[in-house]
Length: 263
Length: 266
Image 1: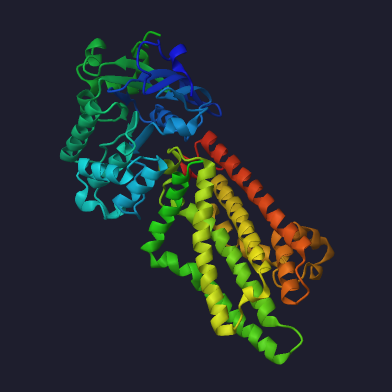
Image 2: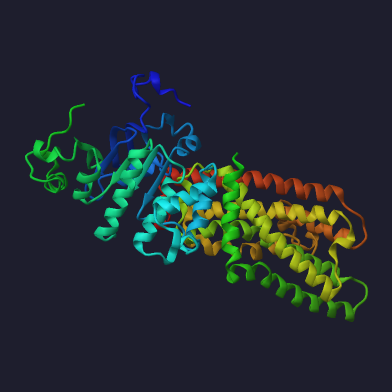
């Protein structure tokens, strides 16, 4: 295990961050998808990852999930170097993404049991019951995931994402394609969980109201770099914009008009 | 190596099998048809001549070749279940190691291929009076050698599909049929043209089927041939695992695991 207490990732006084990313870079040939980004996510913190399509958000998430190798840089999950100790680092993380649903040909319980074994969750049967209870999936526990509605599938996906009580939770547009009521339910459930558990959350969304509501900090991505960072409630005012959505549009269309954050 | 993670791979296949007639049926149906077809052909051949035991020699070879095919497909079909359900990202974003994944695939293949073998053995014994294990305990070694070779071939096949993309699935299904003519399944290696014989000799199945024919003909157990066949198969398991791991690392480097359906062969 990498000892972060003596590294620049931690000053030795604070708890090890759920996620520490240093100088992360990904190149595909001559194309730079992610260009030397650094950030941290701490426990009990929800960090929004914002930016236009193609800004590098999903590439960053894929690198943190260990399914894409960075060209340069370092990722530590709960203090464990992902490149050196991939399996041990990934034991402390989990994710839910709208583009990665659970296999539709297995039931909710079957999927949870399989992923519970993959994450080596202790007392698995009890944990599955807890997750089914938390996400109100009792009546669907023996239903194949493929026939669930979008909202029910999202809940099943989140049940899988919290199954191993991860220190780092990655949520890539978790409420995309949900109606406002279902989206609010999901937000409230995750918020409740984050307040109770020692978990840091990295949350991508194109819904700026949602980001303002749930995130304590936001990172604005543009062309593979972090252009802005700060409290989503304060950021618009600091940059002369009325709303976070106005700021998002400026980041997407005229990123050069915004100053880069101080190093 | 975490046993629970390999168990998850096996359990996934078990869950899929248990509720699916369309998955269970192919485990034995095509092999059973082969046994019936070749059973009647060899019975007819035994009726028209009496110097060679066609039922034992040819039907035994068909039975064991079908078992090899089941072992190979046991690996590739389990892998394809993840391809078909677009489960790569979910699966490979877990702490699962390649050794644990392959271990799970091998165990799943063992479960399905030995089930198919049991059905074929029963059919050959009940309908055509062929009980292949009556030729001695060495038949078990031949079966295990063929299982190892099936595993190696299956792992090599899924490594190729991982590299080339989901459409490469169609290269995989005919692979045993392409291999059969040079694997000395139904005839000795000496029947092949001289230039083809060295190629046949690097295929473990050729040594194992030569052994099978020797045992059935009552010429005793050629331990050297049996040993070479099993050793070659074991070496190929190691090489195929290395190949799959290389293809996986390439897929992680290029982003293919995250966007597998994109089929970006580079």
